Image 1 (cartoon, rainbow, N blue to C red):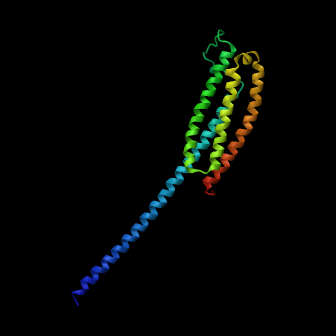
Image 2 (image 1 turned 180 degrees about the vertical axis):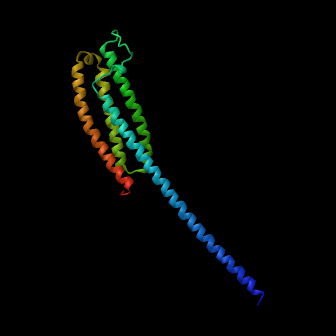
Image 3 (image 1 turned 45 degrees about the vertical axis):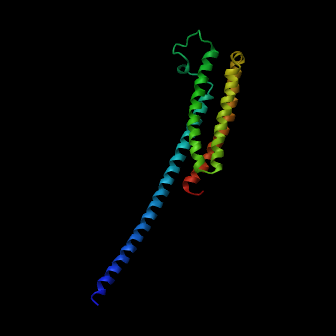
Length: 193
C-alpha cells in the first residue's frame, strides 16, 4: 500500500497543476481579449477625435477662404506696391487661401481612408459630403477668380457679392454636415452603434 500512495499523490499533483494551467490560460485569454477591446476602443476614439478636429479646422479654413476682406498681411509684399494691380493681389490672396484649404483637405482625406476601415457607410457618407463641398468651393473660386480674370478685375464688387452669397450657402451646408458627423460619432463613442 505504501507503494501506491506516492503514485496517487503524484497523479493528484499533476491534475491540480493542469487545472492551474487551464485557469491561467483562461485568465490570459480573457485579459488579452479585454486589452484588445480597450486598444480598439482607444483607436476608434482617437480617430473620431482627429476627424472632428480636422472637420473644425476645415470649417474655419472655408470661412477664412470665403471672407471677402483681404488683409494687408496676406498681400505678396508688405509695402503693397502699386505696381501690382488689384487682380494680382487678390488672386495671390485667394490662391494662398485655396492652398491652405487643399492642404487641410488632404489631411482630412487620409483620416477618411482610416475611417473606411472602421466605420459604417453612414459615417463615410458624411465625410465624403464635406470633401465634395470643399471640391465644389474650390472649383467655384477657381472659375471666378482665376479662369475669368478680366471679368473679376472689371467687376470686383460683384465678385464680392457673389462670394457673400456663396458663403451663406456653403455655411448652411457645412453646419449640416458637421451636425451629422457630431451626432454619428458621439453615438459611436457612447457605444450605441
